[in-house]
Length: 489
Image 1: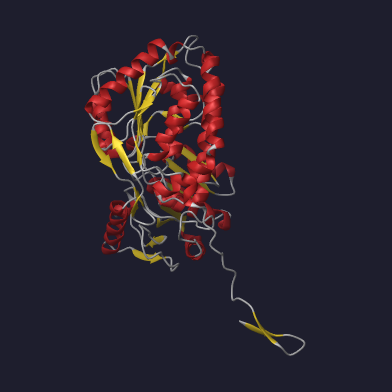
Image 2: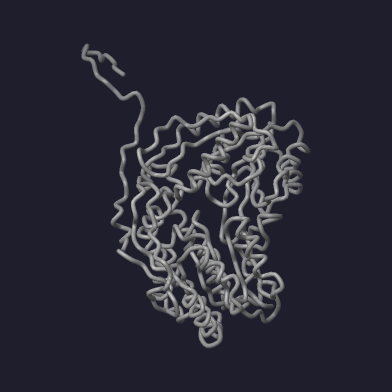
């Protein structure tokens, strides 16, 4: 674009503002040539087949990770039992609180390293990874406060730790979900065996380093990287008193079968197709941002991502026009660049599955629109996508997509909105958008979801309990409610 000044000279100016790339150095992650399982207070060789985590943004191997074998699982369970009976479980609450507080401080001190490592390992933008590390530290701070106050949590006058806990976390928020499980378990005096996702084990192993530096007794936390076989061995082990799992509904069903007939405590968060319900009196700009956050935060891979949008017919055209405009501006690229808003999906397998779901939706009659923002030449990137003309019978309206995709359905009455929102086997997250408080409450009371937000989406806080319903699991996390799974009151 050009303009002529008063002197008659011609100057040029850019047609629009552009963001100059400013990536955070990958060297800050201090990625090592190899990593090992953490058992009984030390790193061990591991007897399983090694993993080779790949950077989803570059498709390059990051490092080698030794994995746990059956003997390592037995050793970790024995170490956790000793810690429960002789060390961690017998400590006074104030001593547990001191160590949890120290873990939180160390997470903050190493936040930049952990954020870069999480971004490299998972493909998520550095801005999201930084928020995740901060939230992980907040969970440890919060439960440090509960460690010496358990008798006031509402679970009896003398609550005791449930015992040895196996915790299995997915790849979408590796460090944050690990902290959300580990912190309350340790606060209660239970000992933990953490099994991170096979594709994103690195920050969990650094967390083990931090716990050792914080003087956590040997065996109080063990970290066993590996494939699904390691998780299955933990869930079935007779020495495990409780199992906490976050992941797919299919694996969750297998864990329920493995623990059926036993007295093991079970906490399941199995995800699902979250929904945003937008009424005709909603603040549209705010609603659009909430819908984009729900569908695209963590590249749409977060459990309960808002992949479904129910919008009242009278505003459907205007809202989808604004949504299309906003999705087109999402910056896709190097996850280490703070300007990037949409990173890479976690694996080639995940990318292929989302593409298959999109192709199926088009074959069933949905109209597909994808953001024209250019994608990098390599990496597991997918453009932000909106599907319109979606019908309730389509797979994308019922299944968890796990990608930056929003499926648009319409409704005429509040009753129809609730019926369509509940027409899924899942029940994890929902958002209601309206300026009428009475309408928001009426709708929230009828939505079968573990957590319902009003005029926002995916706002999580360590102090605010969240849960799940139907095939999305059961039990609660965060706040004092998050202590229940780890106490034998």
